[in-house]
Length: 399
Image (cartoon, rainbow, N blue to C red; front, side, top):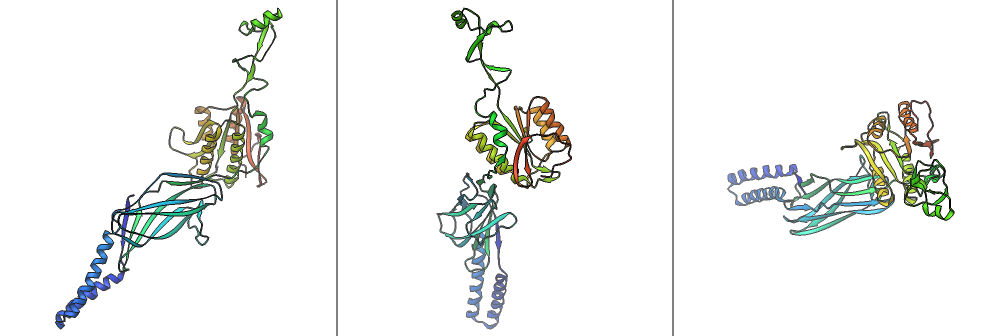
């Protein structure tokens, strides 16, 4: 751990130095050794105090371990901070930890300030010793909490000032608080017919790995489909019947913006998408996720490729947890255009959030290509609803 080091000396030290110098002149004038010894004592205290403040903290380090803890709301865990001291002993020191307000310390008397908690822990540690400090906390709301700053305050030997060690880097400990699911009206009704197996009643594609039956041959059938063994048994040409299949997959697009700000319905929309994520996980429905939050890389927004299963669910929940009011959003229409031109489309598409006239045009262009469109929206500022996307002329939906 690399530190910024600050020395804080009280004004009393200047008074002590001034008094010592004055006593030296008085001792010379009075020819008094006692006054001179007293002056030397004051100077020794002042110099020792200053040297201690300069040297203390050297050899102090923190084990910056990588640790990621995943929690649900009201889940409990703890920050673990291990201090190693290779320098002078630290007596009556104080460790100050600053972390995001998504998790709260167990003490009910501590309040968050500017979206952050500050907690102080007294400690002492001798030379060549290691001390582990645990700070328990409870998950309070969706988000990713980090230890933003760490300070060690070391008082001087005589109480005149202190040395402050301030960490230059964040600690690599994370607390990821997953969003809570919110029941979505219409989810089962809209999606149940597409869940499970990829077999569908009507499709241009067939599963050629094995026929499921035969029927009488007609002139339009290809000879490649003739089932010769069945034809020999029945003495008439028989055509193989294959199971019709279709790729089952969903694209989910979340619009977090409302003009130049983040939508006020962000939490409910994220909770609705969380419900869909659990639903898709239980029924093995593959889906991708894109959110118009700017990121660095080839894809300029938050994007998770199509996937299914437990690992994909975990990545989706972590992505949804990472969205916050401090994110920089990109125009939703720009994200949809990039998605259309560069990313794979799925047979079904769910839009969530504000949509404008220009957004409607992009979405219904997808519909013309055979993609089924759905919308996740807030109904009466209460429940979350999934329904087929309606083509409505609107500047902006207030949700």
